[in-house]
Structure formats: C-alpha cells, structure tokens
Image (cartoon, rainbow, N blue to C red; front, side, top):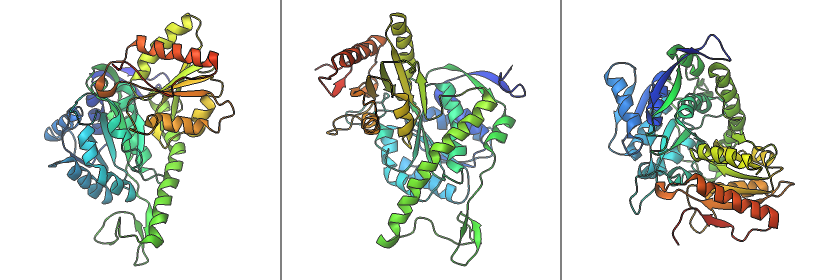
Amino acid sequence: MKKNNLNQETTQELMALNGDEAIAYAVKQCDVDVVAAYPITPQTIIVEKYSEYVANGEVQTEYVCTESEHSAMAACIASSATGARTFTASASAGLALMHEMLFVASGCRTPIVMAVANRALSAPLNINGDQSDSMAQRDAGWIHLYVENAQEAYDTIMQAFRIAEHLDVQLPVIVGLDGFIVSHTLENVDVLSDESVKNFVGERVLPNVLTHEGKTVPFKLDPDNPMTMGPVAMPNYYFEFKRQQEEAMKNALTVIQQVHDEYAKLSGRSYGNALIEEYKLDDAEVATICVGSAAGTVKDVIDELRAEGVKAGLLRLRTFRPFPAQEVQKALENVKAVAVMDKSMSFGGNGGAVFHEVRHAMYDSKSHPFVVDYIYGLGGRDTSPKDFKKVYSDLHLIAHNKRMDKLVNYVGLRE
C-alpha cells in the first residue's frame, strides 16, 4: 500500500494489470447496476473479467450477455433509461454494428459509459489496433476520451461516469484505448480503495422533468410516472432536441476539467488539463499531435531531439469530443509547424479525422502555423521512434522553408 502525495488520507494499492483488466477493475469499483455486452477482440478481457466478478458475487450487477453488439447497446439504453448506472465495451466491427443505437443512446440522453479497445475495421479482416472504429462514430453524439496507458484507462473510467451523469451533460461517453498496445500490455497500476472510488463516483442523480400529467419527477422510465423517451419528433420539434445535445457537449468541456481536477486531488494523478496534455510545448518550434498510446513513444523521441538542440514538442489530445478548439489554438500559438498523427483514414476527405479538426481550429489562430497530416499505424502497423524522428525532420524543413510539399503523408507505407 502507498499513500497519495497530494492527499495523505488516500491509500492506494499497486496492481499488475493490462488495460482491459484495469478498466474492468475500475467498473467493479464504480458500483455499476447493469453491464450488457458481447465479446469481441481486443476488448473481450474487459467483459470476461467483469463476468467473473459477477459470478463470484463481488458485485451486485445484472450482467446481460447479448446475441450481438447492436442488442448490447439496445439493452444498455433500456437499463440506463430506467435510472441504472450502465456500462459496456466494444471494438471494431462490434462498434460499427452498434452504429444505429449509438445515436439513440445520445438522443435519449442516456449516460452510458463504453470502453472501446480501438481496432481496425474490415475488409480485409484485421484484429489489430488503429482508431478507425471510434473515429467513424465521432458524430454520434458521444463524448470521446482517449487514454495513453493502463493507469489512465483505470483513472478515466471513474471520471467518465461522473461526466456522463452530470446534470449539465447527460450524454454517453466512449473511453478509447489502443487495441493490444494498451488493452493487452501488463503495466503497474495504482488503484484506489473501494471506499474512495465509491465516494468519488457517488450515486447516479437524475434530472427532474415535467410530465404530461403536470408532475415534476426524475427523468427515467417508471410505471408510476409514465413518460416517453426518444419519441417521434416531427420537423417542428426534432431540431430543438439536437440543439440541446450540442449545448450539453459544450457544457462537457467544463465538466470534464472539473471532474479531472477533483480526481487529481484524490489520486495525485493528472493528465494535462483533461482536454489536452502538453509536453515541452512552451518553447517548441515544431510539434506533433497524437491521440492515444503513441504519445509515450513521441515523448521519448522529443527528449532525444531536445538533447540535440531541436525545439520539439507534443500535444496529446485526450478529449476528442467535444473538441477543445480554444485549448488547441492556445497550446500551438508559438509553434511554426505542426504534424497531426492520424491513426485512421477519412477516404476522400483530404486528411484524417483529427487533422480536419485541428486544421479547422487553427484557421482562426493568429499564428497560423503550417499544419500537415501524417497517417500511421493502420491495422496495427508498428511506428518506431525512427519514424517519428523523420516526422520532426520534415517539420523542421517545413518551418525553415516556410512551405509544405504534401498536405497528407503516410508513415511506414510501401508505395
């Protein structure tokens, strides 16, 4: 056991867990009422481990093993709509199969938390990690948080329940972890006591609404206070529903930071400002932007480049939805050239999903750095420190020559 340096009353235990196990353990501590899921590599360990907790009587959770991921999300929506704290996990084709129901979940304002062990999409069939699956769902109305390692996966799950269930948000949350790289790699993870987590996460609080009977009641499906969720909304109402979801996303920017800061005081661990994490950006002339585990490799590369006199930096995007445009602008205000690292493709879109968001945000920046896209790691292809050094070398030339030859580039590709 060890004590937290920031809060001497909080004790933590060091455990050896892979990313999937870390998530399962965090969900176990969050007092979840329902888990409905279907196994798919590389997230299977999450629901498999959690099913052991249920079978052993370690949790009082209703575990539903459905016949498909579409059904899993339907079950999650139903349980969350009754007021139950709800969790699921998926990846790749499973997440794609959920696509229809993801919009229903956000539209019904059901604060489900889902871990996505990011994996490539078919065809051709590939079980390894890239971020094509969750990036394809970026407009489904879910909050997207991405982690770098198993420790952050554990910490972020607890925060995700608080964020999703916040009365100013009431939206579902995806916690993305890179398939196999994080999901299956054994790491040291400091875990809080069950009591500390219980106090931090708390019980789910429901917003009050006015029913057709004129009663003010909690927003949940309840036979004693009948109401509908996700009803037919004709043109004179539908638009207003969607506008409310956008307002909730804006609220989430503040809530994500508030919950993160509160958790930092409890655990002693923080991740930038919760939206982005900066690494040696203060005086950086060239920088990369990463989502997920690649940031760890890039940090080592930056340390080597700094020793050689290169002013290199990193911006890790921890929150992708809602996109923290103002924070990205401020972080990159002194950088001359930026490489956005995309672990997915937007076919015909002239760059990847993250690149589109970053370049859009930087359009209104006074500094107007060069922003170039590098697509890497598709299908789990390894990206070495040497590859990242080449990216920084390219950025140095772009900054020096004040021009870029190619807007979209590919790392480690045979052409």
